[in-house]
Image (tube, rainbow, N blue to C red; front, side):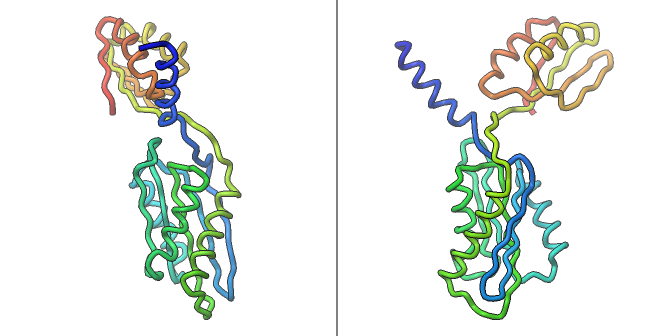
Length: 213
């Protein structure tokens, strides 16, 4: 393959490695004709995290009329869900998801908690309200660009710990946890585009084995 084609392929492939998300939870709000829309944005990486946040908010805001939400997970941005939670079809969940897409975010959950104010807003009014509340939570968050990573478990004889740790340190890998016995293991996160190179380097050490979590 010509060099210039290799460069184009590499850049296109990297688009699925780097992605934008939010650094920490944030909040927003919107009010319309007595109804209050409280919005919450959370960085997430799995559906189990989504369920935990939803359960927490439903418990804390148990008296709210609706708990509308949308989320997107994965650097490829292909996995997403949304819920109207009893509001008219497509009046709330999709507008919240639309804001996630508009800001080009992933690994994010947005929940909008509504307290009904006594006046119906109609479908167009609901779309505007939920969209505005979601956007406010995003604008109040710090958006960061990050690298997609995979968790790799490195197993090795304890006597080779020095060689293993030298590679981990030189590559700047983040250690998730470790276990040291005769056969030891260290769990590290590695950028997905670097997995093959780094694991091949580790496998040159006698007794080392690697596994993807």
